[in-house]
Amino acid sequence: MVGALRGGHAVRAIAGFVVLTAATVAVCVALLSLSDAPLAAARSVIVLGGAAGFLAFLVGPILIGTADQLDPRRFRVFGMSVRAMPWILGLGALLSVPSFALIAVAVCFVVTLVALDVPLAVAVVAAVFGVLSLAIAARIGMATSALLLPERRSRELTALFALAVIVVAFPVAVFLASLEWDGQVPDAVAAATTVIASTPLAAIPGAALAIAAGDESTAWLSGTIALATVVALGAWWIWLVRRLLTNVDRPIISRERSGLGWFALLPSNAFGAIAARSLVYWFRDRRYIVNFVIVPIAGVLTVFPLLVAGVPLYIAALIPVPVMALFFGWLPHNDVAYDSTALWIHVASGVRGVADRLGRLLPISLVAVPVLAIAIPLTLAIVESWYLLMPMIGLAASLFLGGLGVSSILSVTSPYAVSRPGDSPFQQPQRSASRAGYAPALAFLGALLLSAPTIWLFVMTVIEDEAYNPATFWVGIASGVVILIAGSMIGGRVYDRGGERLMEFVETA
Image: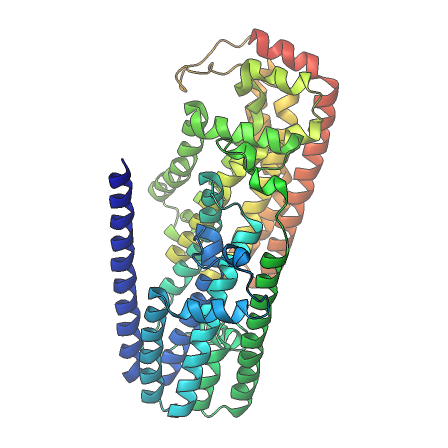
């Protein structure tokens, strides 16, 4: 058994080394290929790539839970000087395989900068500053992860981090891929490059390339920010090391509850308990799984009848995202019925209605937000109309959040029978109450009606003028949030007064 475990560790170490080597070679080749590129194009690629690399080194260890072999807390027993430890650990971090890969990239960085007419001394200083800032950023990321997050990262926490990365990174990647370069830097990318080059994310390469372009004012600004960034990172690292060496962890941190999944991750209150139980149901019960798998498919399928009816592709392609947002908001309208007899836990424990309403909305939000974050940029890339980004976000937010607000009310005022746990999701149970007929339609139409102002503004944006863009975005966001809050409060009030009625329903349905 021990031999098998050691063999598994060795295989993972070799695989990690191979991946790191391949990534280093790819980055070095990409950098060297920019030597013959126009200065504007090379500047955009290097600045944006440098910003992405800085974020990866700083936030990556927090997201993936990288174990720090030089964790300052491991050196407490040696009685070493607290003042000397940040410098010792910082220098030790440079003597590692990832740091050697970073130095190799820095050498290629210098070669590329010199080919782009950057003075050799400036290129070397930029490379040294770059290596130091990235190395310190990685140390800060691992120290922050050790300080704030449990050492044994749960699958649920990792999944949340992955969703956050998808929501942010995917739209950006689709936007950049949709641009037409034609040998020149698009205006949007050039503007973003100028802004990012004046931030701590990419001030170091921004200063060097500004010198190559002859822009002295930008070079001084970016250079000052670069120097301040390195100093600030060093101060942050020193503070973290002292914090880890001189403070004892609370006992509650060492008693990390294992095996509880979402219950250990979410807050220890009524909202967290209900949200965790709902997440377990949504991701394990096939009745829920079928519901949220069908929604994206149904949204895409709406395009084909419209195309057959003669609707232009530009208009038809804009329909799936609002349809998906509407259906995602509509899904929880009968969530109480899916609980079956488990509802007695809520009633018997005296859970407040607002906590019950909001806790049930977390699972569908974790599914809907990433799906919409992927669908919106893909849609805009297809229709080649990125000016619709803000209106589309506003419309999707209004339909989704408004649907959740309406569903929060109807799930307690008008529940109807559904298939029992373990039954086929497509099985249709007998329904004795008349409300079984109007509740789904009322939830659907209610969300549409409450989103009518945003829908009208979106239509005007498409057919009339881009001046409606900000109004569509802010009206959609504001109306969705207001409807969600109002629906949760009203639904919570009804729940507080009608717990016995709901118990009777789930026992007999």
